[in-house]
Image (cartoon, rainbow, N blue to C red; front, side):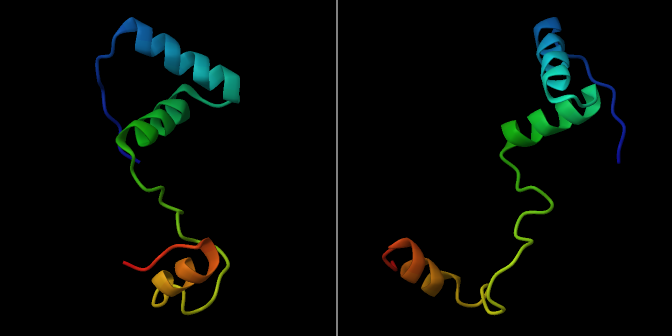
Length: 72
């Protein structure tokens, strides 16, 4: 994990501290989570889970069958 020093406005500091307290987590963890959400980055564990072994190859087909999506 990298360490950075940044300057933020007081209102943002208050918000991060409030989120950390609400979630029962550290200030640092709350700041990272809020930054990930704001940056709309994929989470490092996204895509991990159960499913058919060929899901990565047949994604479009499964979406069409299971979500009513129309292939385009």
